[in-house]
Image (tube, rainbow, N blue to C red; front, side, top):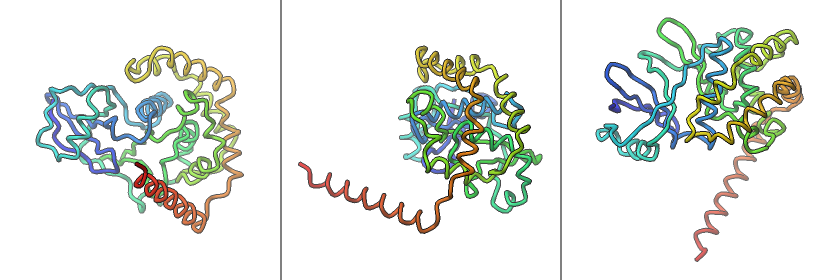
Length: 272
């Protein structure tokens, strides 16, 4: 198994590995955006696959010390070293591109209603107009990608309620496929999701990623969510009521956060 290239996107630096005549895109666990990123990628893509969306099909892959990556850029080598163990991978497609803003502007959003609803269910805050996380294959097929910023496992495992958080709701309202939906469309989506074999999806997660106890906790909470139709209509209503952040508010928030960080840095600098 050999690393043949990497993608310089964000902090994750996904790598392309070759094993015999097969190539895989591997999202390194040390470069992902949160403690539940691996779970989000697996869960979101597997649900998407189960309900008929063009999601990338995830698989688990173990990287060991036998992996040949000595010729790769040093920063990526360090990330690979930190990521040895279980990672998430996808079949690697040649000549695949991210959908750009011009192409996105021509997309009929009504055709992506189920993608939007899946993002809401997953609390996927990372799909934006600037970062639509859509891949265009050579034959024109559009693949849905990237659920590593999903917050659904924060709710399932940490007993938090990110769906009530104003900033999360603003992010969901900024989704490029945000739209008003008919009740029948929402009900049909919920029905398909509730028919997904969640036991299979959760039990296919390696124990080093999710232990048996937490698998039981998650499956129990999923059953509760199914009984409550994933609180999807309630979340959609909260999104509808949410006011998007203005440019002035965003700049103010950024400045305050920066000042807090600088203050923390200066304080740390002088602590002995």
